[in-house]
Structure formats: C-alpha cells, structure tokens
Length: 188
Image (cartoon, rainbow, N blue to C red; front, top):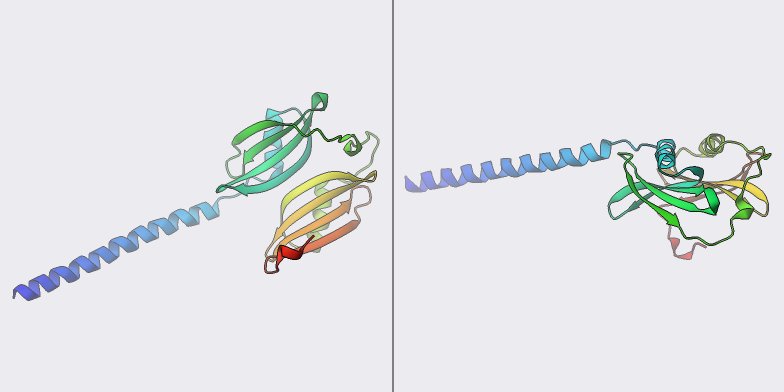
C-alpha cells in the first residue's frame, strides 16, 4: 500500500510540475508574441520627434538595432554648420540620446540649391517599393558629382534591397538585392 501511495504521489508531482513548467512557458511565449506585435513608429514619426529636439533639416534616417535596442538614427543639419544625431526608440518614440556630430568633412556639395526641383522622399520610396515589396529601413539624399540622388534601403522577405534613385527625374540609377542566404565575404 505504501508503494501505491508513494507512486501516486510521485506521479502527481511529476504531472503538476509539468503543468507549472508548461504554464511558465506559455507565459514566456505570451511576452515574446506581445513584443513581436508591437508596431514601429515609422520614419516620419521619428523625424517629427527628432525635429522637436534639434531645429534643422533632416539629412538621413536609418533604422538600426544594437545591443537589443531598435531605434531610428536621425541625422540633422542644424544652424552654423552643426550636425546632430538624434536616436529615437523605434517603438515608443522616446528620445534615447542627442549628440553633436563631429564630422569635419566638407558637406557643402550635398547642400540642395533652393531652386532645385527634386522629387519628394515619399515619391522616391514609392518608386523603390514598386520594384520590390519591402519596409523602408534607410533613406538619404546625397550628391554624387553634382547630381542629387536618394539612397534607399528596404527590408524584404528575402533580405535587403538597395536603390539609388535620381532625385530630379525619379529614374532608378542602381538597384541591388542582398539575399540573406548568400555569402557576403566577397561583396564589395
């Protein structure tokens, strides 16, 4: 009789322990799925938040992830030739930090003349997304030999897609799909 009671008690402990572990695992899965369901604030909101901190013109916005944090890195050209980098948390819109960029490179060739007729960022993004479906992760207006162009990076189901689009005409100058399955050791 003692063997039956001890056996029954052991079985009950194993079953209840399994249920407790399963319940804890379900709770962890709930936390994981909640964090995966959070929505990014988007680049427009990140730019808006950054401009409340630093007055100037947006130079570039990039979605980055470091040390388990996801944030937008917003570069702003401010008064008196100063440049700032504002990091905005990608889910909460909280400003993580602001720092003056000590980049001493001469960016005068990247200044857009006031009479330049350029397509908008939104139009450049639309052009890129017509080529491949993806989520915008970076956009930058740049000057190459006096020609203004948008450098756009999209995250796709297959990897990352990069586009260079003429900022005057909207023509795609370059495009590249970096498949996550390929070996990047030999890419230039």
